[in-house]
Length: 258
Image (cartoon, rainbow, N blue to C red; front, side, top):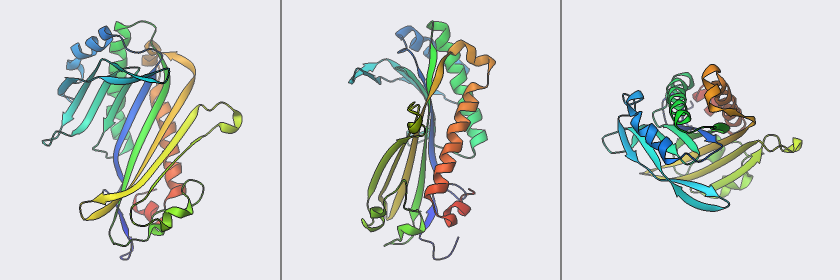
């Protein structure tokens, strides 16, 4: 990277601060299914030793209700989580805040998701997979103030020209469907970007959320015989990389290996 570059990725060779994988089910998990997950802690206890009750918000007809849930985590000394898995509502979510490389992280996350799905499907009948979700949070740090945002992003389809002149602190949120022209609206994207103070620096955060509906709901009990989750998450991962290539400057893409 040029000595005059105004930005660096959060990490030496990538900018990923965190990634969250989620599966959305056709039913809210019953209390007995959540209890079954609590009792099965030993299956994933080595990687997620901490466990605690965690109420989960569920949208029911536009109303936010609370449902029982459980949170498993590997905690840092400051109480934040390197890894966590939340089971409750109609979702199972696995979050990694210690990202290295996709294959390694997905191997761990996919193992947790598959094990949790197997447990809850034994405790609750007729569970099906409705959607998969992936959230990737990239962070870039401004090395100079004032900084030139044009050294980090390309304005265009996803980010308007105005962000280049809004000053050091700004926000931009946009969303779209991959398949809007086909009228199916089954693959949603949301890109939430902002610049905020981070100690004496400014951090540019790009959070890319994707939700992909499965064409035919798949019985959870059938997942063990397929690599369905791996294939679905790879599609979302590839879409995330494609978006970054369209948003970031070539210099930053080279810096993070894209």
